[in-house]
Length: 535
Image 1 (tube, rainbow, N blue to C red):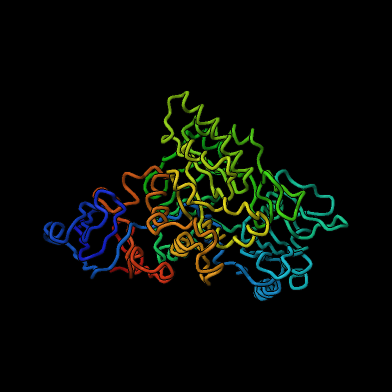
Image 2: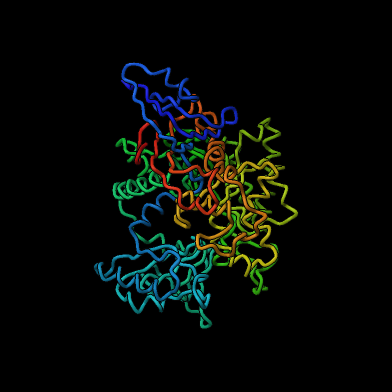
């Protein structure tokens, strides 16, 4: 028998407009059964009741990261760390040290480099890796996730030579003599990535268990996953073992849509541990490798408009099919041309849905990133009732690139303020491992528009785009709940809602913005059980 569990004497921020702050919660069987004053909730005490004194600490609903690459994040913990290294030389040195511990022939993988952090701003080459890895294939994914730096061993093992054609939606970078340089963009990454051994699902599940502990330690109780079915398999292994303690919304990537349709899977199928979310598609690339699809060319690159990953007609067909079968869609769009084109797709599909008598809330479509929007399209997410899925850390990480390559267009980029002011539903996430998954780093970025070192200045980058603490927190609580279709029992601390919550050492609403980076998560509860720390 599960006994009543009461938390009292707290500063509990509920995200419930009917009762914004309370001091006590009563929990039973993984649910909140009462929220209110100490006197009201403690009146429920009976035989076997557990009481925990919060001693005035702040409690929030558990945070949900609405954009995570779960498998990639779990694996990244166990690979060479080249995240935001300040020079290519440091990256090469770390690869060398990693290679010295591995038998010849084993793959070396890593993630997180960006030429934008290097003095010369130049892309890396295979030759730089070849010096330290003559016997190991190397695959280092860029911070953006849209480029890969590989060595000559990897190119040869995967059959890439001077005559290998560019795949559709991708590019093999070549020098003036037509030789592959070791830089692969967009879908060309798969020419090497598909050859890398992945290990078995059991090994991945073990890696996920480590990642789960780190998620709990920073206040996360769930995430929306954008990785492949192999991620789903390993996540289910954790579930079968009774070890899964994060709420997972699983998106469906393009190549598996037909399988999902044949099975009759609809958005929301599953339970409160694992449920299906939306079809995931790519319209374009990213700013880092300058493959985001643009209306006007990149500043300083008059012939570069980016890369179109999927044609509009194909996106329209796939989103239309998914919608008719009961699946939401979410489309990656970073450049203003990509965002425009995806809005055109949703305009068509919304009209189809209206003809079938389906209200917009029954198909909770999203655009992932919405990093640059053209002023003429600024109103269209609100008009079409499309969810803006954005990552505040991208703004502070990328602002120098945005200024360099987008110039004056920057004021329309990374602009959650614009969408929120129009009443657009929104969710926030990290895009982990592209950015750190610690949510308070993202919340700090949203509120200050600054990096942790204070750059670009006291007011932040385009300070008029700063958010309030409440707006930023809702991007991690009520927003993801709506996108998942679980807003009636997640994202708030109220009677009938899941007992997913976090305990903080300070109230984020009543501290200077700079102190958001110093918030410590002292306890994370999922399903009524402490998964990290406690009171």
